[in-house]
Image (cartoon, rainbow, N blue to C red; front, top):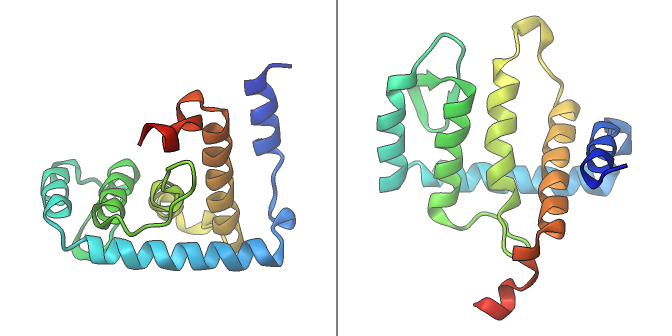
Length: 155
């Protein structure tokens, strides 16, 4: 089996029953921290620019733009705008080697969860699972990356 196939099999096999109490508590803390940094980030110049530019993509299928009640965007653009807000403050969580896991994952997970039809809304536990799967994917990709191995030596 290929590395990619094995990776996909592991990720596809994850379920909410595998989330330990410790993982759930840490995930909640990561989510709360990311939301706080993201809301603060909505006041930055870069966040304002991205928000203004993205208004041209307004549609019926929409997700929340953090800190803005006046408009919504398709999930792809909402995730982008909210991710920029998180990263614009550069206070979001980080790993070694350098990556910001929650700022890349949470905006996408929330935007996609809002796009589900009302009768197919996901539970909080499903959202935590999706968040953790995203963090796991990012961590494994980072682990496999040759570029990430020598970051401390390069900086």
